[in-house]
Image (cartoon, rainbow, N blue to C red; front, side, top):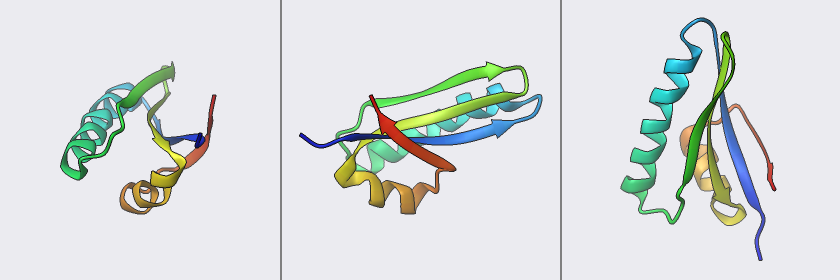
Length: 78
């Protein structure tokens, strides 16, 4: 069984929550266009000046998605 990788985009500032929420829309569009079998995306508001958008991918798809979408960081998803 392959590991899952959570790719993360960080957004800071007073508009971070709306930006992260909007970025998730683009992540879902990418999944549809590329016909990927990924269904785990989301955004999380960490405080009023910091939010993230994320996509969980299988390790074998990570390089393709990373190179196309340029996330700020990634971590092994538990």
